[in-house]
Image (tube, rainbow, N blue to C red):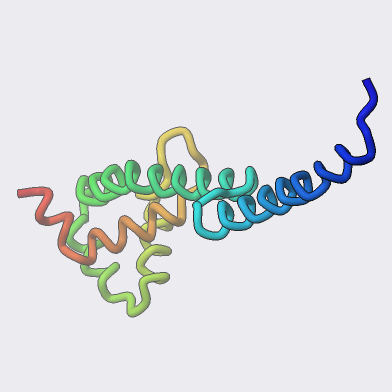
Length: 127
């Protein structure tokens, strides 16, 4: 079965229209439709997982800080630090942001822990 020249000529605009439509659909889908590439999806998933880990481990850090023998002294010492970076470093050095099974402190947990302790949320959880 052979396709005639007239049929080929008649199909050409339809094929160009389909190709153009596919390109337009891809552009609209990525720009406004929320479509993402595999790499972007992986990055989003990793960021969300890291955020969830910090949210889960911060209360443990706060509790470990409060359970320390000299918790009120440590809290006063931490609050003396002017910058949040210094406060999180204080929590890291104290070992409260080093989770069981880990040898290194988690800096994101230390930051969230220092913020939580500095804002008074830790005192609210106690009561």
